[in-house]
Image (cartoon, rainbow, N blue to C red; front, side, top):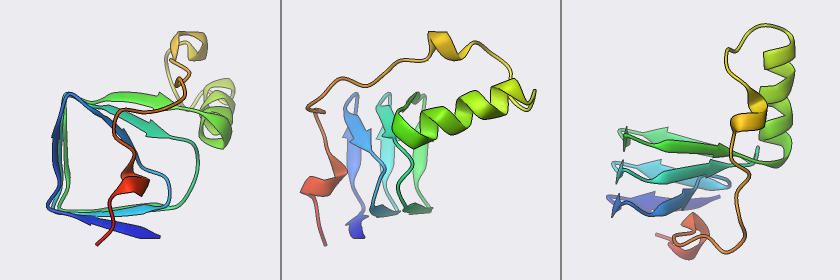
Length: 92
């Protein structure tokens, strides 16, 4: 897993999968998650727009069917290819 430390992003796209975030701050960002491993320590997600794809989206849909989550999964955004900011591009 890759590590990002003290990263600050405003209005970008952040991919969580396979990354450990330490003391990062993401403001107004699109936060994408497809079900891979990630960790977050002392990291702030300010006004995020969450985008779930792949296994994560299927899990969200299952939780909705089970009544655990509210909202309409068909309204959730499917992420386009080529994110503006991919966490895999930054390593410690």
